[in-house]
Image 1 (cartoon, rainbow, N blue to C red):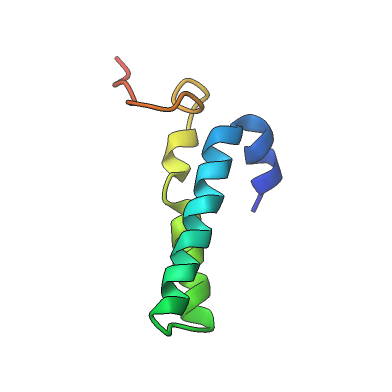
Image 2 (image 1 turned 90 degrees about the horizontal axis):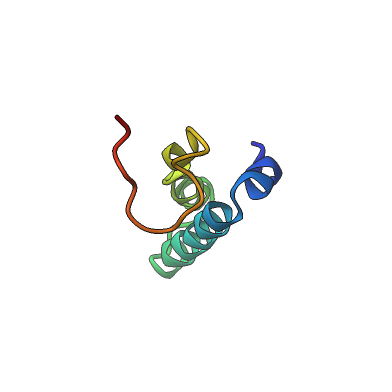
Length: 69
């Protein structure tokens, strides 16, 4: 996975995705979920906003995503 490329492309979304993944894995640990399942929680959280980066115009600015015409 090219997380370093995403960081260069859109640092805001990269940081948000990593923070959400860390929180999801902490929550999994708090629920006594370990091993592969815990990693899957983290990976799913990491990928939850990947659709925002399908084009440069959708990425980057925090806030409401506008519909394209």
